Every structure is written in C-alpha cells, then in structure tokens.
Image 1 (cartoon, rainbow, N blue to C red):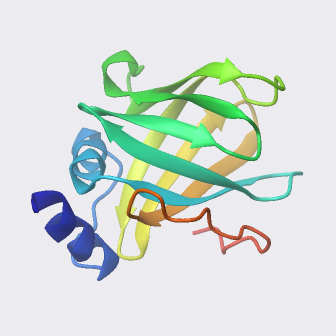
Image 2 (cartoon, rainbow, N blue to C red; image 1 turned 180 degrees about the horizontal axis):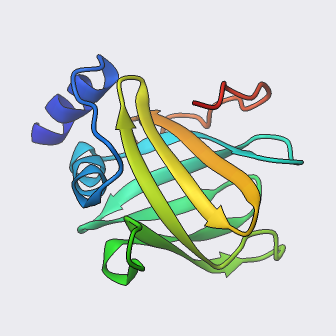
Length: 141
C-alpha cells in the first residue's frame, strides 16, 4: 500500500526532488515504472523498471536487453549503475552510470555514455501494463 500511495503522489506531482541518492531510493519505494528512452540519433524505445529488493530490474523489450540498476555499484556523483546481463542483439551498453530526478510528471533518468544525450522519462505503472508508445520524443527539460 505504501508503494501505491507514493506512486500516486508522484503521479499527481506531489513529490519532486533533484537528482540524488534520495531520488533513487524514493523511485525504488514507488515500485514499478515504465516509459521511453530518448537517445540522439535513434527512434525512442520503451523501458521498464521493476523493484528488485533495493534496486531495479530493467528491461528494454524492443532491444532484447535485460539487467539492473544497482545503487551499490554507483560511481561518485551518480545514483546508480546500469548493468546489462542479457544483451542478445548486442544493442545495449553494458555498464552506464545513471542520475535519477523525480519530477512532478514522473521520473527522469539521465544516462552517461560519451557525448550522446540519452535520457528516459517514466511514470509509475502496474505490473503487466502494456509498454507505452514511444513514437514522439518528449521535450527535453
């Protein structure tokens, strides 16, 4: 019930925080998320996060990649490290530092991989919810 309540607050814009360890922890407490990744030079694609203990299980259904967001492996200045363990088509970077920002409209994740601008915009979701349509890029903010 606590997760559903916090997810409701995030959905209604009741919680907003700058990127920090507390933003990652609050995102984990909210539960499952889904949204789209926007990467320069590529068509947007879906992302799903599901709570796994104190971290996230992550999947990119269209890229055939699965892994996790692990706060215990984070480099200084970041909230977590994305570690991809299933990369069937070799389309996902395997170790990326991440920064989480809770915003009034959901969760933003910034990926740090070279000079390419990559971010994801997610909203709380229930398990089993169909993947979102990711045809149109959202505004970068």
